[in-house]
Amino acid sequence: MKIIDHIKKGGFSLSFEFFPPKDEGGKLELIKTLERVRALNPTFVSVTYGAGGSTRERTKEVVSHIHKELGMTVMVHLTCIAHSAKELFQIVSEYEHMGIENLLALRGDMPKDSKVDVGCKYALEMVKMIRERFENRFCIAVAAYPEGHIESGGLENDIKNFVKKVKAGADFAITQMFFDNAYFFRFMDMVNSEGVDIPILPGIMPITNFKQVEKFAKMCGASIPDRYIKALEPYQDNQPELIKRSVELTTMQCLELLKNGVKGLHFYTLNRSSATLEIVQNLSSEMPSYANFT
Image 1 (cartoon, rainbow, N blue to C red):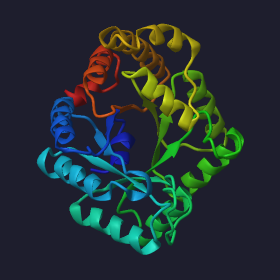
Image 2: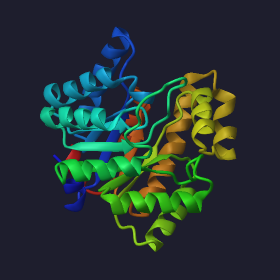
Image 3: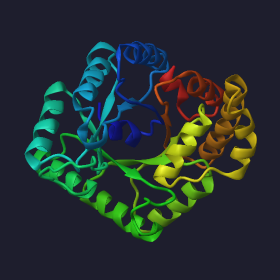
Image 4: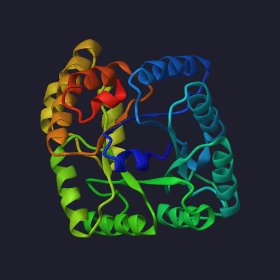
């Protein structure tokens, strides 16, 4: 199923992101998590792609399991910066042969000391390539940055880049994680004023490991509000209490987004399901068309 077809029909999108596990223990844990998530009948799940394509084969393995064994719609992350044009065409062709219809086009980060024949320098170029070579056989998603990409030179420049990706053929977008909805609402106002009308799904990350998420936030330029720091930092060594308070904060964040008519919610799970599933349960009566997922 193409994700955009579901959204265009008025369906609310509920989705979850996972990453390929590094070892057998991680693989078993991921399979358990996926089984729990499948019970929610999500619109789709997505699988990440390591820097420079470092998890290429493991990504394919997880995608194949989700698609063939679990029967869920899956969206594949694909980074372009460390692949030649020939490699990108081959990778996309392989996914098409597998029956995958949804791709998330990302630039990605160049691995250190890597020298490759870069086929596409930016996600924009990859969106164009996929549309030219594969026409409309794929639903293409792109990333959006409510606080601006850290390398964009400012939010206004980032908005211009985003609009170009939309005009090149992106079907919908998923935002980077954010914790203050004001950034999302400002971003939406700015892109709407540029004539952008594709669905933009907010990316939500429950904080289950304060130091880890704090590190992620610094790397990607996402800010953590003072109220989050005050509520969570004192409990960073008390996991049950940290998760309890994080679930409360994230539930409140999502409720505000739902009241403002978002098209869906995309959860960054870090391959763990407990906190996310609790949040979804808290929101079940407020999610439009949630009956479609139960």
